[in-house]
View 1: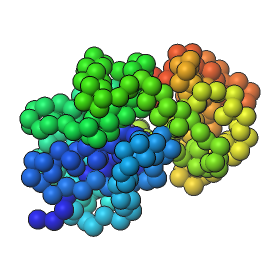
View 2 (view 1 turned 45 degrees about the vertical axis):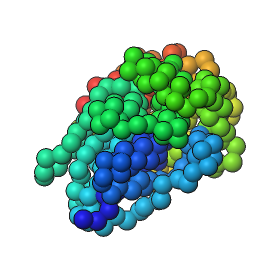
View 3 (view 1 turned 30 degrees about the vertical axis):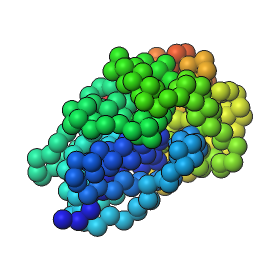
View 4 (view 1 turned 120 degrees about the vertical axis):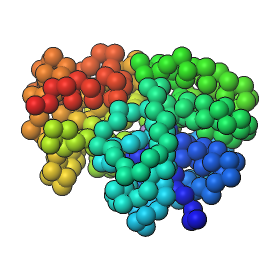
Length: 308
Ligand code: MN
Ligand code: MN
């Protein structure tokens, strides 16, 4: 039996990278030969975590041999997975997203719960298997929970995430709120990125009712600071629309301090965006969304519901 690969979604966030490392650790402790890999670049927030722990990022893979056994974490939609996912053998999925564009030819383990973070599900998998969580694994897990729930403030955050956070903070022996603010801040530094890099940092592709669209998101402590680059961001979004044949590119700038977002919409489906949020786009194609910070819970569902 060859090596099993475990990976999160394309344009990986902290949860995708940490989930892969954590899941590999768990499965290796259970006697399987599993290696964490990634399908894209490591962002600055995640790099902060890896540097803090002095560990290497999972290896980048662009070409996985057909027939390879894989475990998916933090995603299931094939649009967000390895290019040849149809030809890989999916052994398991651990995920907290809607299930869509997913099918297998053989039975598999599928652990899905509507928690705020994949690592909260993995936390339960450690418990269920009686495997001890060491200091480094605890930091990886708590980092992912902080990232996905924006330090427990997102509407996606559940009681289970909070419980895991508290227990992991004890194992890690750190002040997780202080650590978390530093980690989130590291992720808001967009100064060294080109507009194309920014719109792809945390971009997720969806296909629904035959329509392909992308919702991308960045975190910031100052929306105006990011929005000051609107012209070049819009240009980069138009290019993505043309290159990928998208009906819509929605760019979400989320203020992690005040928990609001400003969105920029480009493409044919601007009307769907207006219907979804019951509000007109401003003349510069932007819209302010009070209290909105979750793509998964507050942005994707109304968009999907208004597609026709
Ligand atoms: Mn993710
Ligand atoms: Mn996640």
